[in-house]
Length: 211
Image 1 (cartoon, rainbow, N blue to C red):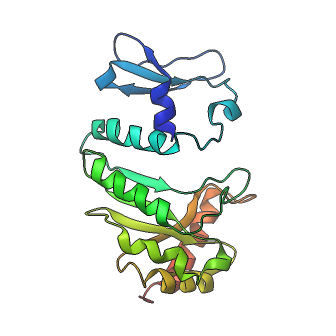
Image 2: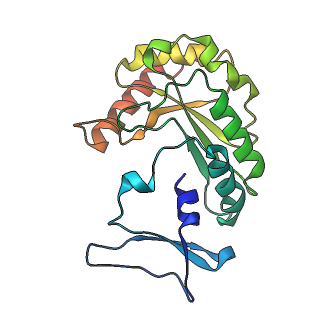
């Protein structure tokens, strides 16, 4: 999680939020009032080293920022969690057996954020598993409270027909949900964001009224 990374790289600084530049454009600065510090990512830093993939302490890296940082976000700002399996070098980085881990992460986030969670986005399966009930079954244990749930089950590869299959399967285990791209709008090689969003809207419109 980026917040975890930022928290671990906290630096000491007095005064208000500041912008750091080194001639290559501004780095991202995050104000964290409770720690009276700032979190800074050096734009020159090697992304492979910063975000190196490791399983050791994975749950703690997720749970720590959820419990410590989310509660600091002002109530007037919407807060949501995008939970997926990663997309480097392709989607998904990890082929999950089912949605159990995402459901456990979502439940933990809702229960421990210290404020309202407004939405949850949970990545779905590869298209070949559109009718795999075992993949979606953990959704029966999802406890979103007031959060709106969006399942990432819109896949460009099979359009409206594929979305209908995944909606039918997911509906066996959760009754109220929206749909979205499997991992946002940034993973469509050769397409700009506008085109991706337009295709997303067309597919969802075609399926609307099914449930």
